[in-house]
Amino acid sequence: MEPVVIAAGARSPIGKFNGALARVDAVELGAHAVRAALERTDLEPDYIAVGNVLQAANGQNPGRRAALAGGVGRTVPGITLNDVCLASMSAVAMAAAMIRAGEATTVLAGGFDSMTRAPHALHLRPGTKMGDTPMTDVMVHDGLYCSIADEGMGGMSDAENARLGVTRQAQDRLAAASHARALAGRDRLAEEIVPIAGLTHDEGVRETSYETLAALRPAFTADGTITAGNASQVSDGAAAAVITTADRASDPLAEIVGRAVVAGPDSTLHLRPAEASRLLLDRHGLTPADVDLWEINEAFAGVVIASADALELDLERVNVNGGAVAIGHPLAGSGLRLVLTLAYELRRRGGGVGVATLCGGGGQGEAILLRA
Image 1 (cartoon, helix red, strand yellow):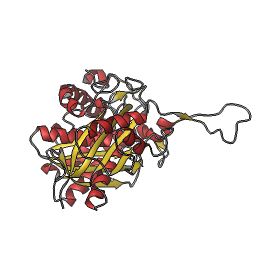
Image 2 (cartoon, rainbow, N blue to C red):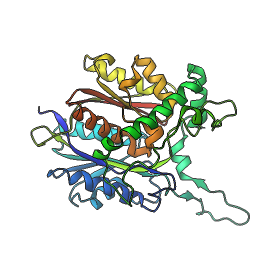
Image 3 (cartoon, helix red, strand yellow):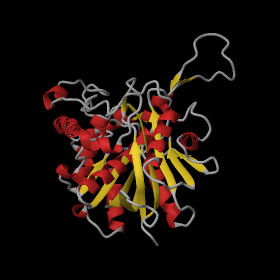
Image 4 (cartoon, one colour):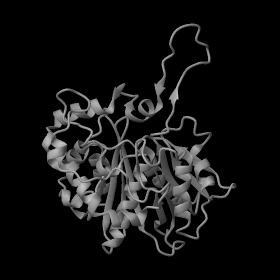
């Protein structure tokens, strides 16, 4: 059959927590990305697959709601996906699988989250007779806390850094490089961004240095190596893409060659991108050396270091325009952001093979293979 391709794609700039996008409703953030993606093609989707992790108070089926608000027709069915950080990459994978199976011809894939606007929740149905009533921070509870391990992902990842021998120095060096590359790549990243609320570029990118980052205190444990500077930023953002077959796309960004997903045996994150990527490449008869460019989500700097080491990668080929430490990590907005950044960069370089990969809460990993 015809290759499955990304016909068009766009994203919002990624806003800092309580930053420029703080007043933008989560669903409208998703709709903005959908609208932008649709404006880059004349194709009309016949299915919707959109990720959203922090769904509380976003309404029924918020992924489809965002797609309809962004211009997809009311007769188009759709689903909201939530496998935490993997959500919008899984949306792309679902789109490709449906098209290959003949269940759809063109799918709107996407993902969005406003971590700023995630509510606090109360259990009030039984009534509170006397005393205080505890509130749950939905952003932390549903976005940053591993419900399977019953442990915060920050502390868990600090322990994994120690187990794998990932040093504070290596993490801070990678974080400094992430900001430097994102600053240098600002004009390149602008190609995939459609401004909103006066924000034109990713808000969290800044000038910094290894020395500045090395002075920060540990964020999770007294003797830990993870800081606010070498972990991904809490963010608001969205991305969307139109997925179809090559014969329907006039100027596709890239072919979606395949996808792999892994889980366990525990809830740790560091090696899941490497494991998913290895499985994906094995299925297609490739090795890591055959891949020209990599996007590995910088959920924590240690994740990129550990997975790149496991795959024996040269970091010069990884996150060449910066990563989530600098750009931000808006949960369901991140997987597709990686895919789009990779696709646009491959096209700028005249083509090639790329892998976008990330870890997700609960100890999962996902990878997508692109060819441009």
